[in-house]
Image 1 (cartoon, rainbow, N blue to C red):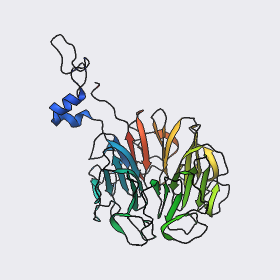
Image 2: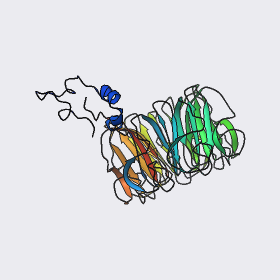
Image 3: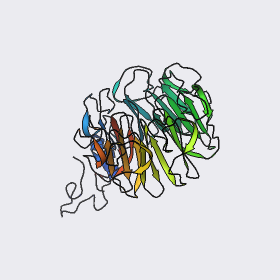
Image 4: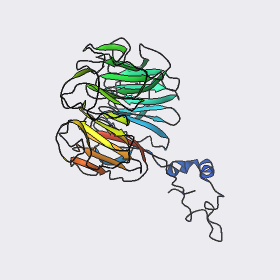
Length: 405
């Protein structure tokens, strides 16, 4: 049991040593290492589909409420969800992967599925950001280098081949100035520190934005060019990105309205959404639908709505941005899944989920699909970042002090 003030380590007069500041958390963890694990809040939680071990809890059992990974620990920094694999970076800079590994998406030099987190073959303690595609993974190190691994049939690893890779490789473009990366179904996009945006992989619907439908196995810049790209997200066969001026641009498949330009037309060059505006802050792409947050804290969704993933209390497709049924001006971060599930965190630290729930992906202890946002069964006001996979989710909490000292 964790140390709690007024319960343990009391003086003869009843005063608590922890409350007096005489016994600190650091002291107890040093002197009693055998109880150190009980003094830390497990920050990384997963739920939903677990058929390939993507929840990392050493089982293949689906979970309809959040569970912690077997790796535990209170030092998780960032998490990403793929089709049926998951990746996360710890505050010590190590990168961990688990779940489906049939084409090497875990980067551990095997094709063995993993039910618990493992480190990539590359190792290292300098990983900064990771992104999962459908069956491939991309990550940036603190030295600015970009690494990719896993499925590569469409050149989505950017290494000028179509060979699957079981261990991390650098892209053909090289460089030490990569800032942010995103993975789609079979394409990848990344932004450099100079503000340029690069894309590669499959391009049948124009989702590389280079005004062609030619698949690329090396990074190319979008037709729009520019040096003011801030954040990019990849969906099933389309891409969305925000510029430093706050404008939101989309391109690729528009079949379900996921480009938000009031049409159902594919675009091979970036276009702005019908909503326009210069106050977009963060965008996320799923399987044929999109979600984005503005600087005023409002949350907008558009595209395919068949499972309620737009969160607007119906299942109607939308080809222009609409607000969720929950409304509000305090949304902080949003994530879209490839299995029609959406999750978002508010500035008050609460986590909300909606969309398809057949295998418990909403974490509300039911299998009921929801067309309006609901909170997870775990509740809480300390959620920090969330990532949606296909039918599973992973989220990081801020560190609680269970010791109370």
